[in-house]
Length: 250
Length: 188
Ligand SMILES: Nc1ncnc2c1ncn2[C@@H]1O[C@H](COP(=O)(O)OP(=O)(O)O)[C@@H](O)[C@H]1O
Ligand SMILES: [Mg+2]
Image 1 (cartoon, chains in turn blue, purple):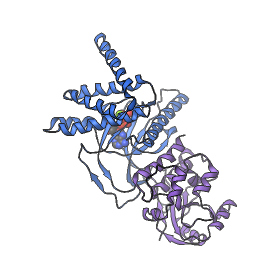
Image 2 (cartoon, chains in turn purple, green; image 1 turned 135 degrees about the vertical axis):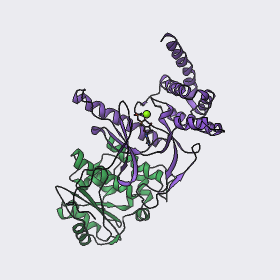
Image 3 (spheres, chains in turn red, yellow; image 1 turned 90 degrees about the horizontal axis):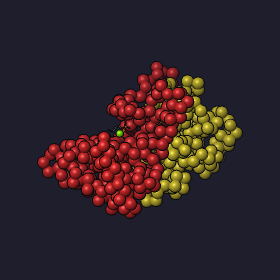
Image 4 (cartoon, chains in turn purple, orange; image 1 turned 30 degrees about the horizontal axis):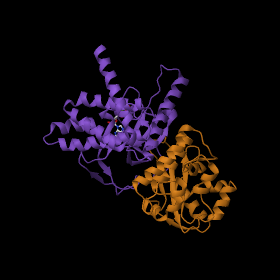
């Protein structure tokens, strides 16, 4: 048992897994070395005025954390938030063992007979987005990279070391989670929700050209799980029209 | 030895968290009086184990409090030990958090936490000797089995307004729901 006067332990290890425009994303641990966690860090921007920078960092960090907690408390599948230090721009959250829908679709669509599995993923994706919108939460960056499928989960409680067994599930059966609410907001506007759907549709068609028909399945499940979806679907038509015009001009 | 010493992830070194659990505690009102009197020989986080669902639940509050002490360097309460009790709370009412999560006259199962820092170092051995002297009760292992045995489900449901249907067994879902409420308080 180490006494507090012994040589200091090294800092908790963290492994950089993505360097985005706004945030650094690490795989690390929380509380104990046996509890995996994801750390999303928004570093300070030296070119911004320090006071403004701090305010922006805090605001974005809190906004993402609050949306995650709110979504989860409403039963919407998102990672659980463990800990937040908004001044340091840190959010620690549940580590999801799995892959993005983007990667999984690539694999499944390339494999013989993967279509049935893809269908099931589409349905659950529609349901998850439907639930999100029914709760008046808009994702803001709804791409297939920001939806994950959990392929393995730890059994037992977080701290319960010893009984931590991983339970593997097939890619198509794993729980589906919406991640990255960094650009999300609370909104009742049909326009905002329709733009979410449009962004997802574009993401689909640009990365999975064979998946055009599949997006129809997403929308079907979306409408089933979101009672108020009719006006959003109408709005989606307008958003598509505008998008088409813009791409003709641009 | 029933006492456990932990070094929490991402908390600056040096620090140590000594944790000791007791059951069948018979001098809870005496301990509570010492706390209220501000007797520094009794500076521990004395948590009523009936309000805890798991070890991670307790550790999350310890982590938040030690983070406030060593990283934020700003406490909402008198010291890091009262801060631990406060950090269990889903709201900002400090008095209520002590009443709900701290030791009370009727407490029989107790989780005691002592934080050792550069400013206030204390060894595991010394903590154990002092706690054995102070608390009249049976030493117990601080683990999820003990936590599950001592959980008062009605109390947890009341304190955290958790969704119904989780009574009787601690599930990961319930644990994460409770942690979510604690985070919510911290992020406002
Ligand atoms: N909770 C999580 N568990 C596991 N991996 C995650 C988690 N959150 C994000 N990731 C991985 O990190 C990547 C970046 O995270 P994300 O929140 O999308 O940040 P960014 O805003 O930079 O896109 C994701 O595409 C995903 O692969
Ligand atoms: Mg992303």
